[in-house]
Length: 400
Image (cartoon, rainbow, N blue to C red; front, side, top):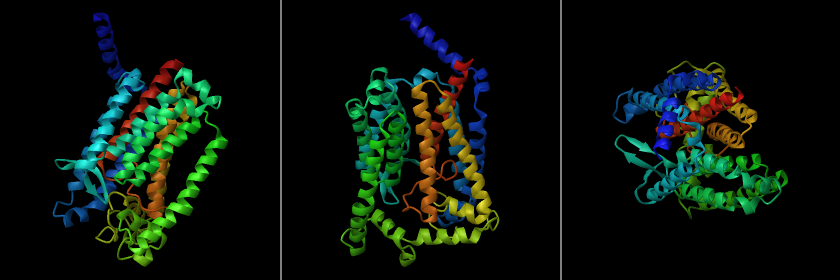
């Protein structure tokens, strides 16, 4: 027992050695730092008027975002430095899963409601959103479940449900608790992550297309029309249903639920190719709600133009591509699935955010990765990125 404790202490000391910093994947780290720099600047630019209107100082959101970024950097360093086997620990994964289940249940009792969803714990001047961390733990949970040696052959052989019924139920419980808040955006992102990881594990493509097609058809032809009729008739009054109505006819509800999307269109139109200049946005001055969170890309487009938006998308694309590349090159299926899950997380979250800004998708309150204001989102994203950096370093050591 004494030898085991000594070996673990020695392993931890070696893991936190500064020499390990040489193993950092700069193709991930540099775009991340640049995105955080863009984010801090744009949060300050888009939030100064909002802060003054709320009775605070123009730089209050700037200082908070800087704090979130610094904590995020610490999280990345911590996740990069910890011993690799901690990431694969089944006990740790299920312990965090259990803690998040309790947190999501606690939200039903003491959750703080923001933008129609009771998904936050209020702690001093900050709010914590547990649903953001669900994305990370389910990536690890699915990767662990899908790569157990005695299950891989069954999955490839077509006996998928016999193997996966328990992990799928665990994921379904999490998604259900997120939907109850209701947080549709996070639920969609989590579902996409789980679906893509199942698909990458050897699950039948034909069956996946069938299930995906049935789910999309159910939403488009049954759930969506019913929700729309209920909202328009006034039978059910809901913040989420109002957003669906605004998605269908934003200009018809320009003074109500369609206000965000209409003013987002104005911001995009004003920005053009090169923008009106940093700090010169008109829509952030009381016209566009949530300019520093959900609609920060609309303000970015107005001030920096299409060129600024494209640069941000390229930087995020570099992170996503490098994450996928690390997964492809790995000989460990756990590492591969984790990388695919993180890449899906970043890509789907960015797509849903931009889709809401340009009117392709209903507004769901999803932030843009590393750019939007918000602590929980930043911490979840940096947790994921830190795990990928750890995997990248581990793979480099294996190759020699």
